[in-house]
Length: 314
Image (cartoon, rainbow, N blue to C red):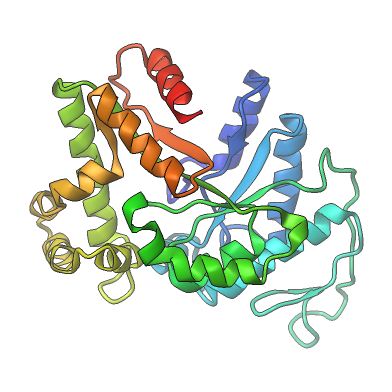
């Protein structure tokens, strides 16, 4: 994802020109970082450059990043996501775009500008008018909206064992409002892959632990951290509180050490091949459509590992 590092669009444009079959997806493009119309234009551009291999991955990010880095208010994230999805699809249709949403209006609402705005339509023909939209969401209301409007759901810090307890009701409610034209909701989830029992596996598990601790402890204010809330819903209430307290007091290493081994076991695909194959089956059993894996930089023969995991996931 972008967060506050390299931008995704330039990177994917380069990759699109270097590949022929690989599917490309933003994971994630923050909805507050660009206007909805520009997001739609960006999507058709990458889709054209890749000849129909692009998936638009969207997410709201969080208030610390959006207000601290982009300097715009973090308001109505669910309504904003809904507006972006709706506007993108209207832009891609080729019709004049008019939209009155919870967070965004096109043209700009009367009294908010010069009054000269008028409905416009795309000046070019998209390679595809039905670019798939993936939504990164973990909160119940956001997941419900994703199940209603998205083509793909992309949860972070996904534990398949908690799928039904944590997200079942929200997914059911969203799917009840879902248009049949969208087809079935697909799911992208997975984790870091490290096969065997050597030092590289220990290093991979530490990376998972540290990243999780960073999100649970510091990716949000004390009273507004979506990842901390998710950790609590997983049943790690005490650990979530300890991680946050330590992280916010500057004790990062201690905070990371509080991420339970049990969580790392279930959130990663690490260990001997038999165990990893069993874990992949657990993901498949709850309906994960695409296994999203991270391969550590120090992995020997990474392409061989990818091919193995691909075969196990089929």
